[in-house]
Image 1 (cartoon, one colour):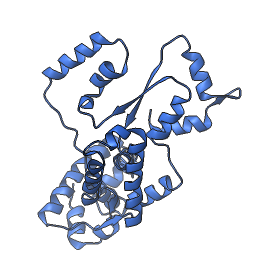
Image 2 (cartoon, rainbow, N blue to C red):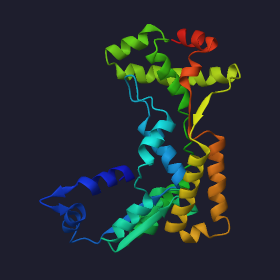
Image 3 (cartoon, rainbow, N blue to C red):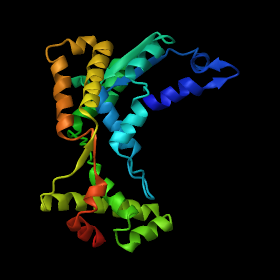
Length: 270
C-alpha cells in the first residue's frame, strides 16, 4: 500500500466510530500477522511518486511542473515510511522494514519469502532457484520531459490535427501510442540539435531540505545503515546525482515551444 493511500485511510477510515486498525486487527485476530514496510530514500521516493502521478494516461494529460507539485503537496507535510512504521508498531508486534538498498533485496519477492515471512522455506528456496535461472534485469528511470513537451505542444495546437482529433474523440489508445512515439522523437531531436533544455527547479534551500530529510529519515528508521562505513556518504552521493540529473526540476515547456526550430519540428511530427 502506498504512503499516500495509507495516510488517507488513517485519516478517513471509520465504521461505527471505530478506527481502521481496530477493525483490521479484529479481522486478522486468528492469524499471525507480519507487516512489511518498504523503505526508499526520501529524495528518491518523492521523484518516483511525481513520475507515477504524472505519467501520461490519455487526453490532454496532467501537465504539472515538479516545482508546483512539490510545493503544493509536501510543504504541508506528508506520510513517509518512518511515520507508517511507527504507527504500525502501535498495533502489530511484528513489523519489518524492507531495505531496498540491501544486496538481499535486489529481488523483492525472494527477500519477502526468505527474510520477512516466517516458515516459508519452500517458497524461499523456489524463489532463490528461480532467481539464479533468470538473467539480470534493470529498471531504468524514464525521462518525463519529452512527454511534457509533447503535451504542451498538443495543448497549444502545434501538432498535426490527428492529435486534436484523437483528444476530441477521446481515443486514448491512439493518443498513448502517438505521444509515446513523439516523445522518443523529441528526445532524439534535442540531441540532434544539441539543445540545452531550460529547466525550472526548486530552490537551493528546498533541495537542502530534501537532503536533510533524507538523512534524518534513514538515521531514524535504519540507524545501523546510516552509521555504517558508507551510510551517510551513500545518501549524499545519491542526492547529488539526482541534482545533476535535474530530478527536482521540470522543463520550461513554454520556452521550448516558442523556439522556431521546435515549432517547425513539432508541426511536422506525425
